[in-house]
Each structure stands twice: as structure tokens, then as C-alpha cells.
Image (cartoon, helix red, strand yellow):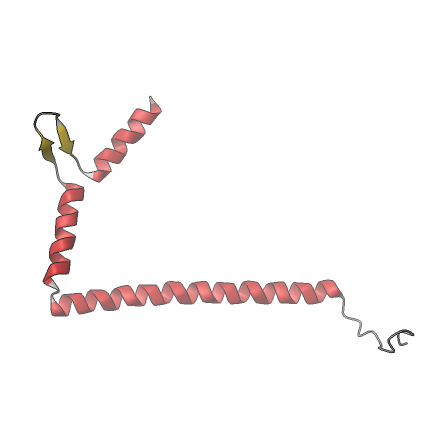
Length: 101
């Protein structure tokens, strides 16, 4: 039986079913894009590591080791004001302890 105004017969598919299919499709596409992004980033890091190991990139290695030394080491920065550099993990522990008190 066709609609008297438009002359189009209904197909028997509800709008909520169409909406559900569209929503599931959008979620599936988003999940695929996110998974593709994560996989490509991981592959890029692996390739970057391999290239760095092969070529050496001395400046990058020096910068990374210098950064690690700053984050992991102890050092007295200023004798007069008693300012020290401590490892970042220890600094985070101290902040948590101070905030608990």
C-alpha cells in the first residue's frame, strides 16, 4: 500500500534499525583508525630505533643519555640556597607524601 501523498511504498525498515547500523559502522571505522594509528606509531618507533642503532646518531644518543642523567641523578645545584636535583621518581614520591600530610 503506497503513501497517498508521495506515492512511495514503505520498505518495512525502521529508522532506529538504520540508525543502529550507521552508529555501529561509525564506531567500527573509528576503532579501525585508532588501531591503525597505534600500530603505525609502534612500527615507526621500531624503525627509528633500528635506524638510530645502525647510523649511531651520536647527538641523539648524547642528548638522551644527558636527559636520563638529569632525570635519574642527584646533584647540588646551589650551595647558598641548598637547592638539589633529585631523581624524578623520588621527587614524585616526596610530593605524594607531602600531599598526604
